[in-house]
Image 1: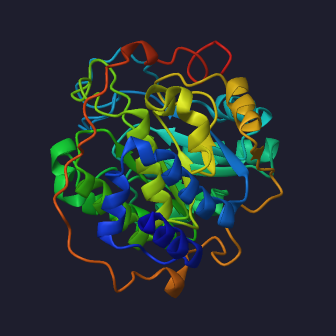
Image 2: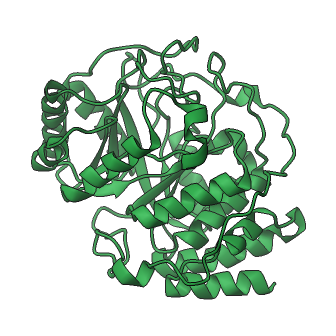
Length: 384
């Protein structure tokens, strides 16, 4: 297929595909799916070999968020029956993080619900980072605390944080449809705060919220321009009690096409398979390892994930290997801080086209959505 040959060549050169090429990936047929995966897999292997980086989430503060993000079970007015608790103490968070590290995680992601941290919250998280680093000096720590104010990113960096996560989630043109309590521009500004402080920026998207193909391409192209080091791809987990609980419009095949498109647009970036993989990819998760080079181990913020041992078995059975703590994730040319002129948009980028999702509605698999009842904030052992 000429399209795939072109995309592979561009990916190996770190050249941005055109919008039409990116859209075309999303509209390929199921009959061509393995060819799409194989092509994107060539790009993935060029920059990351067969390594899979493991990341582990620790939810420092769960529920009771004042923001109204429609996809989130912790949102204002949520009726989801999730765990709700205030800030974990540093030793509690460190203990939870240690379970993930013992399971093979190279990065620990510290997440807290809320619009953004107060200065006191930054102090709390700084102490938690110190406790984790004291126990596991080599582990990467990524903070995800919402919108940052001036100087807060610098304080997190000084405390030992390695990265900061703040997702764009969806296209700028449709952002107001999912959230009204803050703006798309607020999110972009926070990512730039993190980059300006010398933190490795992590920013991605959520697919499956009813967006069009054009929306998906918009947000991925915006991420390419913003140039984070890590791009997590989440698939909406439709939790009962949230406004998007009825959005079951992803198939495993469409999820794989989305991941392939992200890899072609962001060839040398850490593409992370994040929330919702078990719900939407299901038994086709191993194929996704040919597209992504990073996954979350175990549970998510408010829902349970696949058993940690099953994740490790899946990686080994698919012929991949867990990335060790002594291995640098990003290719040498990125240097942990962006790809500069080599990743500038190509002349072939053109105006948008209004393609629809066109995947057809998938059967709702509500049986695969399980609210987290173990790990951080409970007396039960975590899943790692």
